Image (tube, rainbow, N blue to C red; front, top):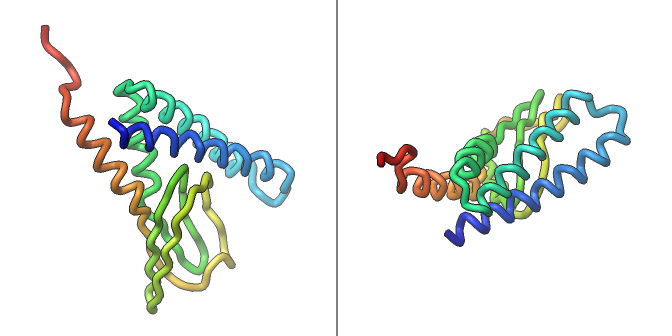
Amino acid sequence: MKALRILAVSEIIGVILVLLSISLAFTTPTIPLWHKAFSFILGIYAVVAGILVWKRIALGQWLSSVLQSLQLFQISTNALLVKVIVGLHVSIFMFQRGGLHISPGINGSFGVWGTGHTERLGIGINVLAFVSLLILVKYLTARPVFQQR
């Protein structure tokens, strides 16, 4: 159960960073309103998931599973970069014409950026989100959802 506690703390710290970035984004008029709204919703969702996981409520594990699934893959093209990170992460990014980028850290961001962000086609995976998802699936499948009396 220590792994779930670490996951819960990671999500809650990630939410603090998401909310901090939202507060900065509201002062930046070039960021679209839909981006700010989705980031806020993502932050609220993550804090609820983190608190419920901390309290060992099964619903929190389900919510956290969805959150970790959103963070699994990162895509980069010359027109778009899609990247969602809430909490601890170790991302490994591989580019089409060679190159590997490893990015560890703690972050809270919902990224959908347009043209001009990168010129190389690539795909990334958040290794910690993958491991967290495996742990959550283990805990969720270890006990029955409906118990008979």
